[in-house]
Image (cartoon, rainbow, N blue to C red):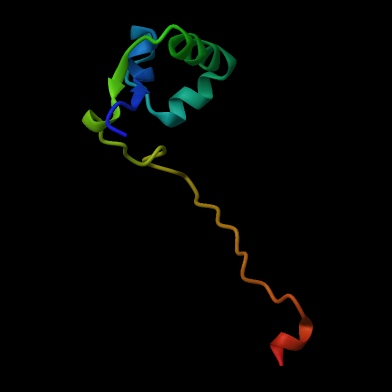
Length: 79
């Protein structure tokens, strides 16, 4: 919908935390989560979703974990 919005958490966090990305945000723990919750509740730094480009949340992961959900339901299927 054209009127959907997203909160720019980067703009809502302290200057000394910049630059911030998903990894650094998560490492900050409870303090970051509290500040993010306050920014959303107080509707600080909201942007129109149509004006935002959403990228991968963790741009340099150390590892990628996948879950395979392609297992056999019945051992006879392997035959």
